[in-house]
Each structure stands twice: as C-alpha cells, then as structure tokens.
Image 1: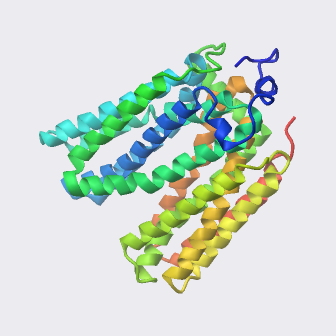
Image 2: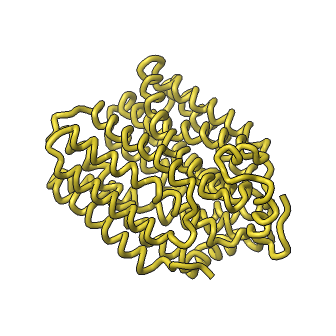
Image 3: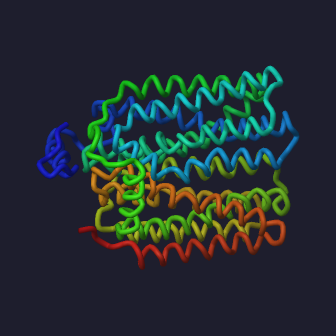
Length: 417
C-alpha cells in the first residue's frame, strides 16, 4: 500500500478501489486486517473483564464500595489526562509496538495484583498505585487501534470497517463481564486476574505481527507535539464540534447508566440479572444495527444522521423513564440499541475522513478523550441526582440528548474543506 504525492489517504483509496469490492468479506482479505481485529477483540474483552473483576476483587478483599469506585475511576481517568502525550508518541514511533507495549503493561499490572493478592501482601494504597500506573498507557492501544483502521482499509470500506470496530466494543461489553463473572464464581478473582493477564499477552503477540502503514512522521519535542495535538483539535471545526456535541451526549449516557439500574431495582421489580439483560439486549441490537448501517455511505449526510441518532436515543431514554413494566423497558432499550448503529458509524467515519493522516495519533487521542470524558461526568452526576429523583436524572439525560443534537447542527460543519 503506497501513499500518494500529497501524503493523504485519498490516493491510497484510489489505488485500491478497483481491486477490492465494497463488502464485509473484502475487509478480511486486506493484509493485516484479520490480525488487527483479532488483537482488538482479545484486548477489549480483557479490558471489560478487568473492569468488573477489579470491582469484585475490591469488594471481596477489602469490603469497600468506596475503594471499588476509586479503582474504577483511576483505571480510566489518568489515562485520559495524558492522552495528548500518548497521541504524540503514536505519531512519533508508530502504533503497533506501542499498542503491544500497553498490552504488556496491563498484563504485568494484573499479574502483580494477582501475585501480591495471593500472598496477602497487597494493601489498598498499593492496589491504587498499580491501577493508576496501568491506566497511563491505556491511550496507546485505545487510540492506536482506532487510527489503524483508516490506515489499513481503503476509503470506500471505512463505513464497514467502522462497523467492525464498533462491534468490537459491543461484543466485548456483552461477553467480557459475563466471562469475568463466571470465572470469579468458579475459580476466584485471583485466578481470573491471572487469566485476563494471559489474554493481554496473547493480544500483544498478535499485535506485534502487524505492519504500521504510515510508520513514523516528522516530529519535534514530545510536549510540543502533544500541545500541537490539542491546538489542532481546538482549531479543527469538525473535531471541535464533535468534542462539544458528543461529550454532551455522553453526559446523558452516564446519567442513564446509573439511572437504569435504580429504576429496575426500585420501580420495575427486577433484580441485578434483569439490569444486565437490558444492557445486553441494547448491546446485541446495537451490534446488528452497526453491521446494517455500515453497508451504506454516510458522506454528506453526517449531521442529520448523527443528530437524528441522538434524538432517537433520547426517545429511548424517555420511554424507559415512562416504562410501566420490564417488557416496556426492553422495547425502550431496543430503540436505544438501534440508534447506536448510525451514530457510531458516522462518528468514526467522519473523524477519519476529516483528519489529516499525519495527525491521526495526536488528533484522535485528544478527540476521543474529549468525547468520552462526558461519560464519567454523567455517571458522577447520576450518582448524586438519582438518590434524590430518578425522574430528574433520566429527564436530564433526555434533555441533554436533544441539546447534543442541536449542538451537532450548530458546531459540526456540513462539509469539510
């Protein structure tokens, strides 16, 4: 795969479109694509397993919900703060080796927790330190994987590739917690942590066999490059608009993530199993939706598709709030899952299409962090508001989805120059 004279991905797409048909089958004939998907699925499943296992481990070992919440927060937030530096590193040194490095760090951290836990030498503060240290490299793989897709895949197949990418999150969110819960129940949290570490080792081995098509790009000082990534996103009309609209939408998602379990447990007569089933139902529907919408081109229709998806998700949240029964709530979650498909496809593809290839690492690291930061903010708000009023929390989620749709039209350009 060669780059054209201008160094952009457009020339890559022109060279390949006559050779590769636009189908899902064609994706897996692209050299390196099956390996990328395999390593991605292993790592993302391991990541979702870790999220649950660490909570169960903290509750089992220290009997502290506060520690469980702190560990969950520190497994994500510090990495978001250093994401501009991670993006600069990805552009400076290539992606595959740094992705494998993060998987290796995660495996080492989990192994250390398992060994110290088995020997009763793991104190609360040491657990916090290990989890925090592990989170600092997380953006290397999180951003690295996302930037590999537009580099490996020709432009006409981006929607389909992004459907596979989105489904990677959906499938791991369905099966990861289920596998983790079953393993903890059968072999205990220590052995589950060790097995999850082994999954990261395999993911690292698979990743090392990948070739980075873009390789390294010219760079200056590390902190200067990181700052340039922040400035690039701030000045980029599309990425700036997405940062505002998608983060607003994710605040709503965070509120709903806290509000739904409380609604099910206190109003609808369900238990923890029913909460998990509702989220799984939404995830399965989303998996089908992204594969369907990934078959269609989105260029020129990004804004109405994204804003429309936000409004439909808001409708699903409203119907959940009004649900008189579990069956009605299930229908509402089906609607939320269906709207996830076009939302993910448009978000991923528009960001790829409108970002200079030389800035993929730095721009994606900053953009993805700004987009995602709304979720922990919304979850925190939900934890404070839900005990006072479920209606207020879910009503705010619905309102924020409408606001995010309006912001999309106001801040995201219809076309990119």
